[in-house]
Length: 130
Image: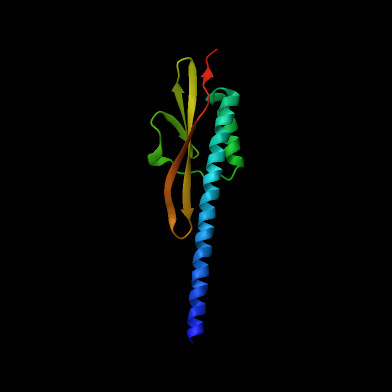
C-alpha cells in the first residue's frame, strides 16, 4: 500500500510541473506575439510616414496574425487612437512627429478567466515634416 501512495504522489507532482511548464510557455508565446505586433505596427507607420495612410495596412496585418485583441478599456491612453487591442499616440517633436504604439498582453485562460492586460510600448523614429 505504501508504494501505491508514493506512486500516486509522484504522478500528481509530475502533472503539476507539466501544467506549470505549459502555462509558462503559453505566457511566453503570447508575450512574444505582442512584441512582434508592436514592432510591425511601428514598421508600417514608418513606411507610410502617416497614420492616416497606414491604418488600412495595420488593420489588414492585425487580421492576419493570431494577436488576441485585448479590451483596452481602462488602459486607453488619453490622446491616442485606441482600437483593435492597440493604441497609437501621435507626439509632436521639434521638426516633425513620432508615434508611440502600445499593444497589450492579455492572459485569458479557460478555467481561471482573464487576467489583467500588460502594456507593451514602443516608439517610431521621428518623421520629419517636408
